Image 1 (cartoon, rainbow, N blue to C red):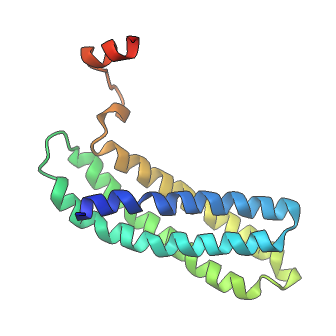
Image 2 (image 1 turned 45 degrees about the vertical axis):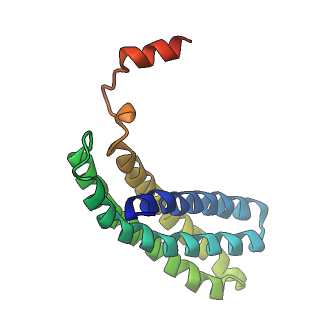
Length: 159
């Protein structure tokens, strides 16, 4: 398995973990379930931790694909720049989650922890979704603006 394959394999984990954790955090607040809040914190830690190898495999993956035809270097550079912000957001959230796990049992701290995590989680989700979208545009021409399917593709769509 080369670094490009590893990057593609791992990059879905933090995106999905952040989304699941944020939904779980909102549900925990709505249902007043401290256990769900704790579980969401663990998901935030996982997302932050897995974001590191995802980021670290990005540069080696770029070296493998940069000379392949059809690769958009503009999208690749945008994805790389956005990945830094996503990594920072996910890691901050992961560290806050570790700290939050120690204070979660304190009832008076629960609301503050929830509000803080919701704001940071929504920000991290936005960054991660944007980075993922840019990553998809590197080689997936079908998701570029102005994409027009080939005549062959139109033939298969009609079947």
